[in-house]
Image 1 (tube, one colour):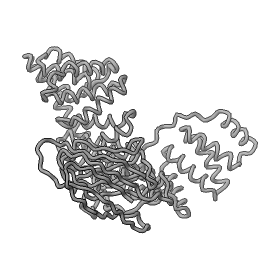
Image 2 (image 1 turned 90 degrees about the vertical axis):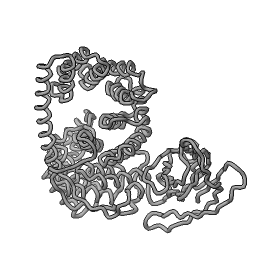
Image 3 (image 1 turned 30 degrees about the vertical axis):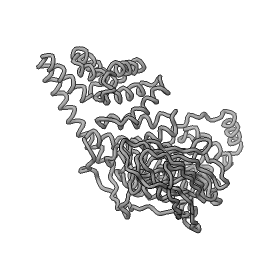
Image 4 (image 1 turned 90 degrees about the horizontal axis):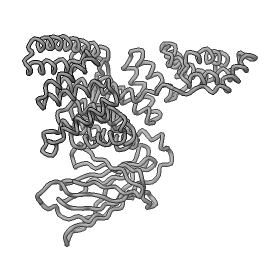
Amino acid sequence: MLESSAREAGRGSPMVLVQHRVLAHRDKVPWILVFALLVSPLQAQQGGPSASLQGIVRDPEGKGTPGASVELRVKDATEVRTAVTDAQGMYKFAALAGGVYSLRVIKNGFDDAQVESVFLASNQTKSLDLKLGAARTHTSENVPEFFDPPQFTVSGVTDTTSLGGHGSDTVVRTGNSLAKETASLGEPAASGRETPAPAEKSLRDQLAHDPQNSVANRRLGELLLDSGRAGEAIPYLERASVTDTSNYQNAYDLARANTAAGNYEPARQEVLRLTRNHDKAELYHLLGDVEEKLGNPLESVRQYQRAAELQPTEPYFFDWGAELLLHHAPEPAQEVFAKGNRLFPRSARMLIGLGVAWFTQGSYDVAIQRVCEASDLSPGEPAAYLFLGRMEQAISKPPDTLVERLHRFVTSHPNRADAHYYYAVGLWKLRKDSQNKDRAHEVQSLLQGAIRLDPTYSAAVLQLGIIQAEGGHYKEAISSYQRTLQIDSQSEETHYRLAQAYRMTGQADKAKEELRIYEQLAWESAQKADRERHEIRQFVYTLRDQSSPETK
């Protein structure tokens, strides 16, 4: 059931009985939610957004539910605001404009709750309590039900010679770079775990007396593989697999080891052999990894999709979306990440992927909002802040919400040079605002702090020069530009800006030489970008439903 209570301003507000239907997941019987909602007529009022909506999310027993994700959407619009309930189950949305909204509450382990229409008048404060549906008995928090098919079909691949993009060349390059960085979020970190010496010695001693012992060979192979020594693991896993040909785990571990060691074709053949008798998600996911490494992205994305359909876990969903994003299919990627966000609302990297999918389509405000939400989920982790910093560099004026998150980044990570740098750039780009005109000293202090933490941080040194030139201090700017080139002699922007500074100080010959270098580097950079576009082929896809994936 879904309960609601409303406290309205004014007297004589009519009572309206509204029925809402929440669609149950596939193979479940739909159920009807009925709730009474006191509403007052919308009143036209002047002023900025100042309405608010708050309440408590309760479980079926009526207890407050922490960690539930509450999505608020303006009726018939795509933009979504998300709040996460606190320890008492409270949620709140502030600074809302008057209008009609819809609400959706998601909590792993429970059926979702929905309110299709919530009326807010300007300056109104409304309280609306929500009750989640019955607890699911056939799914776990880590394995949610895959309840609807994707609304796209990937049918082929093509080269990206004529690949377009949204916005300037800087934005396009940034979008492509962010797609690669998103894919890297799904790659397991290189294992730094050491093989336990006693365990390794014991297994080696056992194999010295019984070299064909299948169990001992597999265990030693697994120890070596899990500690990042895939090449050493392969002989033991091969011996285990040959000794006991019917053992699934032996063969699967051998395929994993060959993949980690770069032996992709043997790994592929082993996995394909296993899929004849085993319909396991882990096999299709591993095959997706192998096909991508072998340069078969179309087959790779199909295997990732198969794995996610069989076992819709967070890693499988993320890798499916990341593969689509990597191969320039932002709309399908957006759909997968949006569904992944609904299934796993506490996954920061799912929100990052969703944000990058929006960014590559030119929806920068929505993109930044999603990644800001990711930073709020894991405020102590740097990943989301780094994506925000990259997005900030590609746009002319970042929103205040982004700069606020970067301020939190430098506050929580005072020893990171990039935290100082990104926050400094954000403040500098807001310098035209009246309240930010006097922040030049703070910006320079942040940049100098970044350089102290990392003297080789060329971007911070370059930015310091830009600010010095903007203030008319061209000699200081020239010194900063020259220092930047000592760190990175191939920086196109530095050569260009140095040419401008030389021109402003009457050094025409030096300015001409710097422009010549800049033009040569720009040409080489364009050639390199063209080669990279050829290396990553683009998916050809068809959308079966043109509505925004995030509204589904």
